[in-house]
Image 1 (cartoon, rainbow over the protein chains, first blue to last red):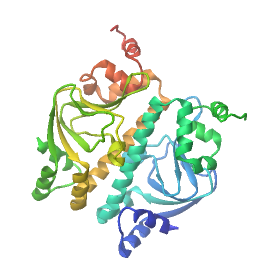
Image 2 (cartoon, chains in turn orange, blue):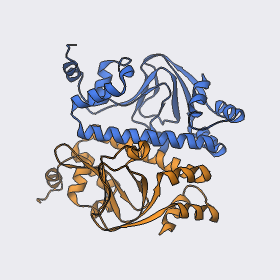
Image 3 (cartoon, rainbow over the protein chains, first blue to last red):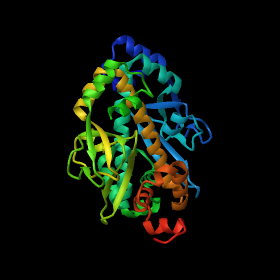
Image 4 (cartoon, each protein chain N blue to C red):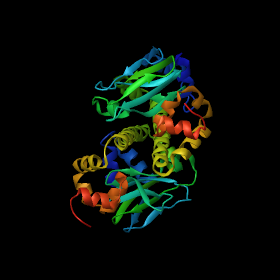
Length: 190
Length: 190
């Protein structure tokens, strides 16, 4: 299971065997059943999670009691509440499995130590963070310029396979509109 | 002028003199007059900009012809269109000086070479990107959960000095509401 992480790191840098062993010794495996939570509001998010198999989501409950999904994580994505992880302040978020999932987690303290020891892994995370940040900035732009319908069509064009894996109400929450609106633009009733 | 960048890097890692010299040799100095642009839509954003002095903004024009400010940069902040920089696709953004400003820029190719040569600088950018991404995720959360008025009061509490430096219509654009609404919540007419 840790092989998937090593393979992902090796897309960006080349770990030798000793380095790969060190990475494997620094991470933990977690298996989650569908709907199981690994983070809840009030907890400090102390790990970053790499999805080896399955699908998870990061969300909070807004003042109106609605779920607001900020991020999905599927195979080969890292997911965490970066703000809580960075500041060690309690999180406002839930992280929950949408499918039965296998995660590889790294504790923040271990992560900091590992990055000091292995500059290649530091490089890997710099590249990943840069790509993640670029994608988030792009998303912020879409939220401020696309209509709801455009945002939906754009998303399903970019991620057609992914759309099949998640409940429609979660897709609506992620894209920032109601499930009713989503039903309408998909041209069918729920 | 390059000293400000070296001082900022040294807050996170410790460069020796040769390393600092190498960083200084890899960056360029740019002086901008107020309102001067360094990026326009259609151009590929090929540099990342560190604000040594002054204040700049990253914005796009939405379909209604309104400026949408995505980010401000003041002293010790890096600012770029990360999506264009990352993908080498044409940008949708403007980067413009709000005040007379001094920038330290690094070209993408030079940046990649420098980070390969100096793991400490790789580490510095990993840390900066992590902090930047955490702040952006937090901002995305505020956009989806706070009222306009709450977002305004929260922002001026976090950045009281900065609010004095920028025109009110830019603050309104950044926070996602109209200048008229901002006037109203500030309790005065414009």
